[in-house]
Length: 242
Length: 242
DNA sequence: AGCGACGACTGATGTGGATCAGCGCAGCAT
DNA sequence: ATGCTGCGCTGATCCACATCAGTCGTCGCT
Image (cartoon, rainbow over all chains, first blue to last red; front, top):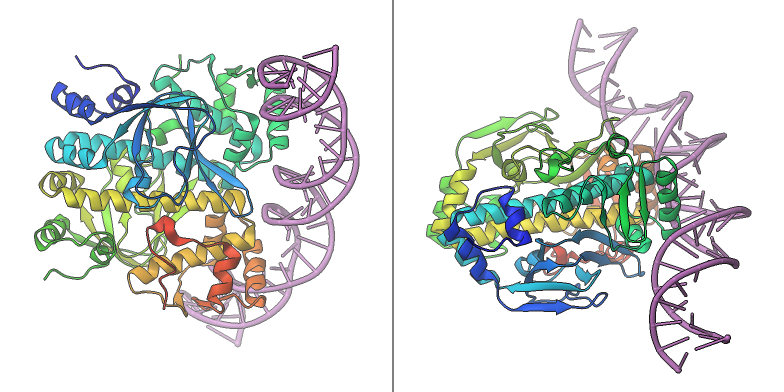
């Protein structure tokens, strides 16, 4: 029996990987490294970058505009790849910043591609993970393009609940969340001021409370209705929270 | 020598594929089909969907909200995959509509995954294409989240110029563009009314003219500066237009 | 010739969220 | 104990863009 890492838990939700496949997967993991919060591990424009699998902590990938505005594209939680796209497109199109202190394991992309030739099911699983990441970015585009601030916030926090529940870090009660209101603002295309107001609205409406690093779902069902949250884009069957 | 399809031209910009690899690629193409403009070929929520490679014409992938708003995620041009993500995530998270009449060839995903085991370089090439698609979605997120309407429009049209030039359908003069102002509005998160005003501004500023189905770059360099357009996210070296 | 549908285009009015300018509090360094 | 910094929080004001309510021109249909 191979160890039960967040990545294995996540991929396991999609395909049951055999022991040989799991050991190929395990063999990809090289050095283990730790990064402190706030200091970028990948810079926009950088080339010849390594790729990582996140073992613990939270990170975010973002793009910076010349005038200093930033757009956070997505947050990464344990089990997610970091910088896989940067490696395939020779130059990184985004930066990655640890939100908390993080632990990662490095992977060599050449090893990964070799592994595909040996175990095609693993290729399918990795493509699935990449597609799921893309689907989440697409959903963020819908958030920013077509939902108002409150729906956007609600939808975003519900997505997090679903993602975290897959690796056992969320329940129907809520989840521990190390993000600041500035992170939320940069991710949702809002100002920090407005994030604050919107969180108050949602709290006063009795739907969700974000306080002291914890997101509490006060009325999960109402929240799902309000945000029109349909998690099928993540290839999960339902809200999945108990 | 294998035929010079748009897909081969596009992948060729990334890796030089050998003749055996090209013939594996060609063998993936099954039935050729034609679809009329406006009638969806993939519906949001549908499962067991086929995947296609676009041979001619333009399509768009979009998501619909319950209240009838829609967000166009991206447009597809010849050489692009249609519905690859829908197949990997068992249920389609988006719809695909032909903008013009289109010709496609069907591919079976099982064949594609088998091909990876035989020719790992092809896996790399397809992963590259998928990463490039994701990078474009990310850039659209930045457009909608952090650029104002005029910059957004300029950036979007410049991206199109670069993409189309890769398959020989654009020059520094401009390109034929079958989109309506409603398409642009749904893609950029604007109203059609505002799209119209923004196009007028850009035209009066002497940067770009979109009229009668043709986008003309009146002052390409100024436009690039105005939109802060850096095409490196598409893994292309420069504006690439002559 | 007349009619409907569709797309481009426009002016008037309304509003969601940005921006500015501030306060309070907790943790931490000196 | 004292300031400093980061984060949460708030009211007042402003503006980019939405919405509404049209006009006009072109095409295809009868």
